Amino acid sequence: MILRAENLCKRFGARTLLNAVSFQIDKGSVLALCGASGSGKTTLIRIISGVQAFDSGSLQIGDQTVTADQPYPRALYGKVGVVFQDHNLF
Image (cartoon, rainbow, N blue to C red; front, side):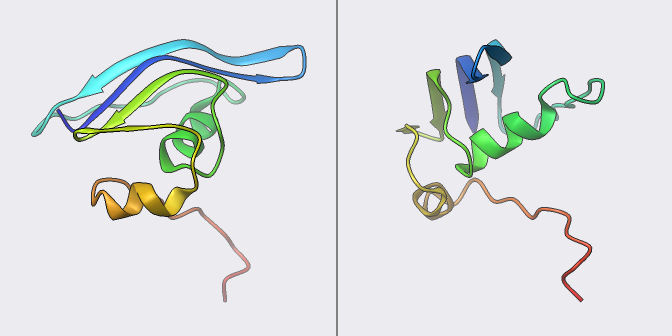
């Protein structure tokens, strides 16, 4: 198991953007993240990478259970990294 999310939830005020999202990614598998605009895809990626905190649920990367910590410990696990699209880089 590379990544496991169980019942991840994220709220912005009264709006619930992610509600009980659960999945597991095993070594050698592929997982697609599809959905309409505003459905929470980017929020989920931001939570996995540690850029954004989740409100409840659990996240496991490899054998490490992570909380709403800074993104750099997740990169140290050697499993998670993200590069956001930014048109202003150059």
